[in-house]
Image 1: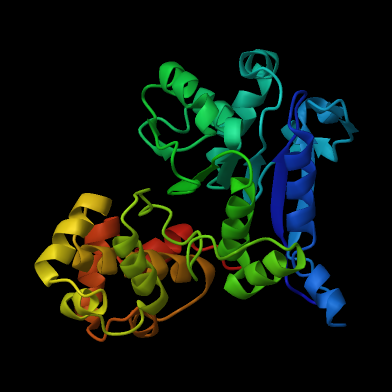
Image 2 (image 1 turned 90 degrees about the horizontal axis):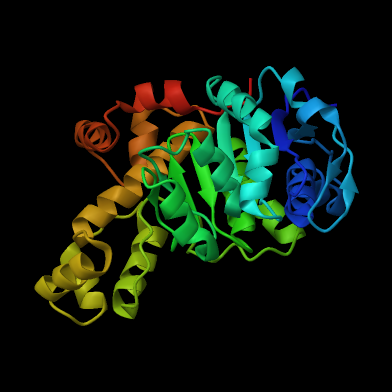
Length: 332
């Protein structure tokens, strides 16, 4: 029997929720550390304890009329590692009005430093709770106009699959839920287990290069295929020495042209993109494991520790150690 303490995930249930996301989230997190291990006849170690919580612990009537039983009352949840808010399947305004009493509980758990994540129109509940004010967020493109009108103080990026702002995560509509779930599983359990879940559930985890949902804060949709090719190369080789001149030669253009096209497509120069990718990778390592600064710098392509530390603090306003202390999700 493993002594690994599972992370506690609470999925918020409410009348009008999209049943497929509610059940899908329950499955994905519940079978992390289970399905792959069963296939290979390895010891099973569930990595998440997952509960569906509703107001008063009552049964949940999903938008498809499926009735699902809650495991507990949201008011009884004092802490969790992750609070997941699924998609609103019914009329958004109707669901928000009928579930106003959920808002204080969302705020209360956010104040415990739990990760808070919404899928699709679930972002409306986060916005109503005031948790997205001044933050980057996303939702289904079909709700973008309404969201912007209702919550103009939120920096909505409806073209993004997944957004992250500190400990607040949002996913767009449809299959973006899988991107969100795999990102969160990797955040807590590492890339290996996230990959195992993707394989056992037959989820395409190659949607955004080897670091999939990695650089969620960097993603900007554009049509420049040459720049995308260079981005993919950077994201797959960030640990190696990278020179802009070599990247330009790889795609048969001049350094000046590559700089210009990068600036136009992603609003930063290639060297800035390289640095940003490395910093994002460093953040993920600090969140998921105990790692020394020297090892961290080596793993993200920096031989000069002082240079790496300076760049990291410029990007995050925290030293690597301060960042780890604040955002680490290492199991105790």
